[in-house]
Image (cartoon, rainbow, N blue to C red; front, top):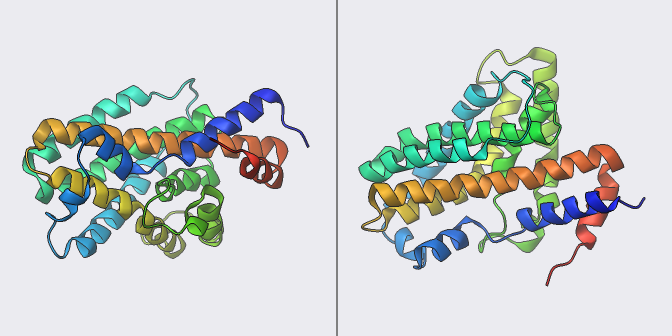
Length: 262
């Protein structure tokens, strides 16, 4: 099946967004200094700490921002408002430094998830459905290519395939039993799996904020870049899902893989 030209253009745009350089490269380009300098300044136990913070932030954000959301009509996504909101939380976090991240990240992640849901709605998702809400959470696993990634595991469809079984189980569990508590086991397992990938970007954000003289202004800028990155991931993800509903998943994946750049 051939895609209409406007749909093919949308798919090309989606791939450009989803396969662009990861957050670390964007931060490095913005700051003019390698982000590795910041990693050297993080505490020795940071990898364990960031995993705990990220999982907590994602769980709280999911229940606050997504599973309480109503299906409200609207037009274009309000990206700017959400960027301003996370810039504010980033400024506060930058002022107080790394110890504040455990408080700042859940707030930032909740705002970002609301923004992702807004993007989903603008791409014709039924945001009231469990499937669409889980697709919003799934965006946090789509961090874009990372230097530590194996190429076979980092592509957009490879990540979705890796999450597919957990997504299906979480969707069925919630559809059958409802979300009676944050501890719904199928959802917890999915969040843990997504948090493992999301924590990579959180670590990169923390490393950037650990660099001396970043301060409140730098924290605001980094948070703006943080949400901009995941807004791009969300836009690409929900363009693909919209086209899958129209043409079928296999057709879109084949066309996506055929698109070349450079």
